[in-house]
Length: 198
Image 1 (cartoon, rainbow, N blue to C red):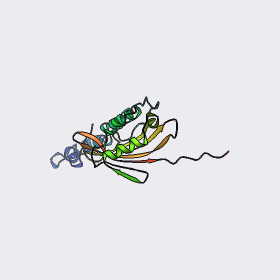
Image 2 (cartoon, one colour):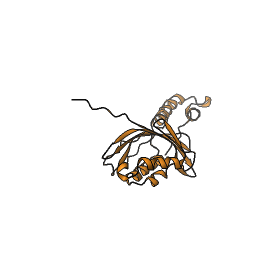
Image 3 (cartoon, rainbow, N blue to C red):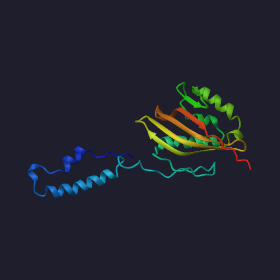
Image 4 (cartoon, rainbow, N blue to C red):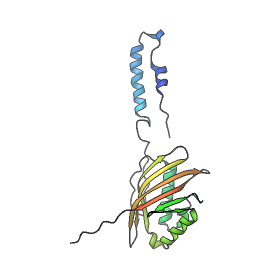
């Protein structure tokens, strides 16, 4: 739910005394002025957007950290992708990407263009459920960019028997035909720390 903060002109018109109301005007001005400050202080202009309890990730066996600046429609897409991946369903996972040549996917210093090419890369890198492992998307931050776009920053943690992976990602979402879909994905792998020699 979003709230529109009262403008300064509204506060002046409602609370400042007029020339014909000099008596008692100052006291009323101070009282209402204080109320206006309190109302402004609890508005979104002075505080972050309301938080909601984070979803749990049963497949990964962890509870993700609470997202900052939450935007439920976009967060739902990310959690649906997480569930699809942990079910070993790349096709379902890819349904949340823009299914056109507009999609771009940047990783490892290269950019892949188009939904079909992105799907082909996923299938080549993760041909089996064992290779896919279990993923957790964590430390999410969602920034709305107007009414039909949003930016998401986050981290991923891929657990599997061999070669577990961690890294960062940034996603650009756009609302197309009533659906929030990913039009750009930039994923980078964290550098693995070398074990100290004993």
